[in-house]
Image (cartoon, rainbow, N blue to C red; front, side):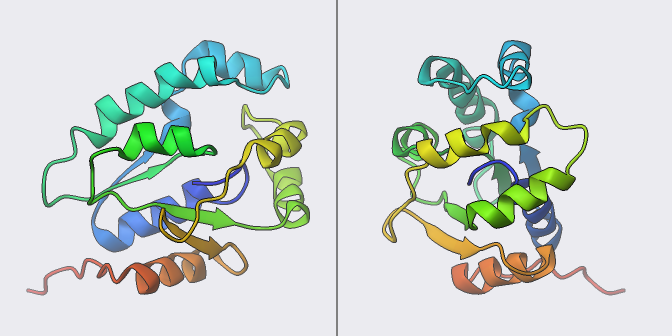
Length: 166
């Protein structure tokens, strides 16, 4: 989880590949109305997000089979959003990708073709309710995608999937 441009997709894809897991980008499940609103530089509100979060819980989290791993990249900026996604599921782990406004802003300036314009970064930082240590793990986005993914694996103790030989 984290603000736009923090690397949720890239790090999530790297984690999923390391774990032999399924990767889902929550942005792909936004309804067209939400994408149009963000493209118009209008921040989403709780009413915009609620059906989307419910869909993520129903179609991604709740259908992950026991013993399987799904890596979900999702902004989940507020505690209430995370509660909707994680309530009653002790095996769900939260990782907050954290970086400075300046670093993330510079990354967004280089990103092309995404519906979320860099102009909304300030609203995302204003909305962000960073998780405390009891809620999840906070990891710096400094370094390469591979370095960030390795820090997450190390901190969570989740073992990478090693392909079988032979």
